[in-house]
Length: 308
Image (cartoon, rainbow, N blue to C red; front, side, top):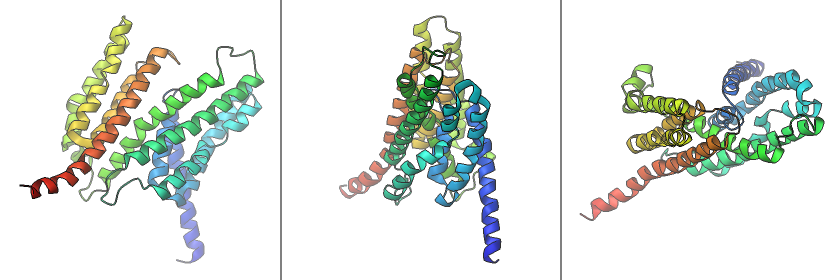
């Protein structure tokens, strides 16, 4: 294969990755809202997992949906908003993720997840995304100052920060866990996933429990009962973490966060935002502990055996 043929293959791979990413991005954006931004989780997972040579494909794959969205809503929010909204967010995230990947690898030499790297990347990219989106909102408010008097860029920033952080915690750890299981020597298949302990626990009790709690929160007439059901969604996360480590936290966090999102009654509802903030803190802390404990046991066990 000569150099020109190699370039053509590389270009084809870039376009294929861009198309796949654009399709996944559209699906994630469809289910997202201001304080639950799933596109951030998809974007961060791709930046952490994919080789840097494929990052241009991510830029292209995100630019096309962003441009389409900007053109469709330019009349609603103004030309300055459209100009800023057309810029792919992944372009702003690459300067955050690239030095993190160089200085602090995502995994240790033994293959264990470095949750500090993951959470720093999650918080840093969420902050950049929140600032950029708040500036987009400010440009729309300046263009039409009397159209949305109840909105402000300052309030929007904190909603976008929470949405970006929780959205990343919803998708990124789950995708990392699935990737780690898929790259193990034992081939990951639907049958293997179904017969695994984690798969049985998710289908057998974690998923039904989250669905039931979400139904209670949706059907409840009393605010206290609704909030208690929402807060109880952390229990499956803790239980899966105890049984399956950070993989359990990742999958449990995904299920609990998705279940919580289904209970939303209004955008920027203070009660909902408080529950999302508690869930984000709970998932973050459980990720750190569930990834740290196995390494701690591996260090302590030889010393304990030597003392016998």
